Image (tube, rainbow, N blue to C red; front, side, top):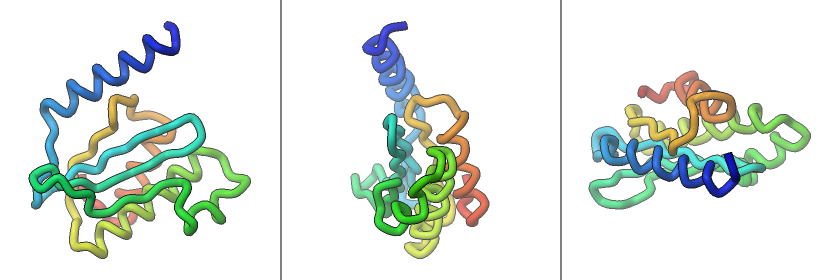
Length: 121
């Protein structure tokens, strides 16, 4: 599968997921984006269209800790940070949007780290 085909397939999967999944005020959406080097996570209330909290492997808090670690380990740090920030804002339940990626590797590490901190999904 060519690079462009793989990107298009992920976009199609994400569109299909988003047709069913929507974040509400009671249960916002935890959206994951994975690039080749970094991983990003946002908790979004789709009703108002606002991002409540976000975290990424580029955050200064994580960047220092993730230096020299594997991408999967930095994804765990991002997952725990986004969960801590969400809990501090009063969000304890989220709907997990894997963004068209397989629930495997970095995406799974982020989700399990967020669950470990106390986020419910």
